[in-house]
Picture (cartoon, rainbow, N blue to C red):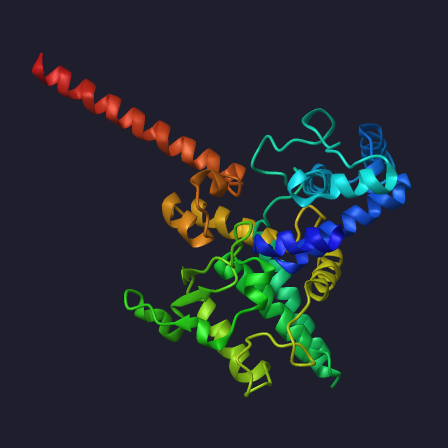
Length: 342
């Protein structure tokens, strides 16, 4: 059954990682209820879900992911076109059925499933974090230990994740050929455009590419200095190769960020993805057009970009004050014109 289901998903062009993760969900459900798929019942679904929520305290999106995977498996094995119902009826006297229904599974009712505690970095937090990362590179380098290059690499990855609003997969797959000149912004030199080749894909589709324009003047010197003095792999196209010339794992960068964040007293509400949140927020606060920010982020819909608009209280107050002042000026101007006519 699992082999046939795997082939069906491969035919749908789903990623191998997605298929393997779904198969693990099936194995976990079987281990929990201690029954084969042709004996599954709705009550087992509800007991499994209650265990995930009350004991393991999984997030809503995680629970829904389990439900979606198991519902897809049940749809496959209970479909008469594949014949598993006849095989099981002949061998076990029963047949598999779809036991994951609308009334006993988590629904997807809004676009954003992120934790409400997550937020972007403040500018003060970013300054402190990047400064601490640079100091760590200097400190490790002064001890003549090998770790200075990894510290330098991770510091640069954090800065570029913020400089271009990149996800980890996007920044970790960058290659030297992904940077190009922007004829409309020559001041950025050969780093005017960052071509993202591993953007977030739609289900069953390859990674979605996009081009992100450089907006901050401090970005090109950081890239140039890393490529010239830190990378240390002249024959590799990868911008951020690991010590073994592979790609850096996400857990490696997360661990370093956690150490820096703990040392600086930055709360857990900000994480690796918060660099991307900060990028969108700070562009909007600086007055950049929302459509431009949407294109930079690679969002298909403006509503998705709106999720990242965690503008600060100071920005909101200044925007309100500016609007009120403008309204007052227009009212006084209209009153003056009315008085002159009289």
